[in-house]
Amino acid sequence: MLDVPDGGTVADVARRLGIPADLARVVLVNGRDAAPEQPLTPGDIVAIFPPLAGGAPCGSK
Image 1 (cartoon, helix red, strand yellow):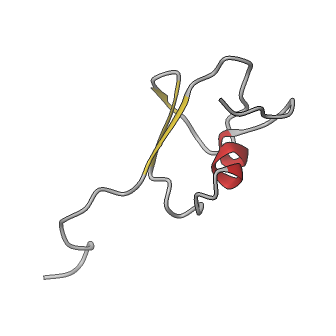
Image 2 (cartoon, rainbow, N blue to C red):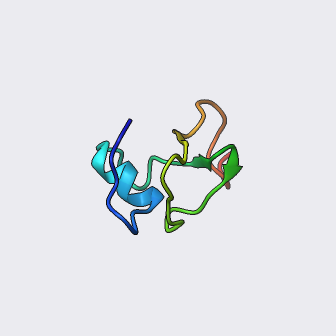
């Protein structure tokens, strides 16, 4: 559990956990897609997933 001040956002949670902004690729709040600026309410469940491994960057051969 993490206490977040009123008006806290998904980005605030990631920052408090030390997750770089460019590393959080998939973010869910209560099982639904969420933007970093989405405000949170008491009891929300936040899941942050890093980029998946494998594949090649776009435009590479």
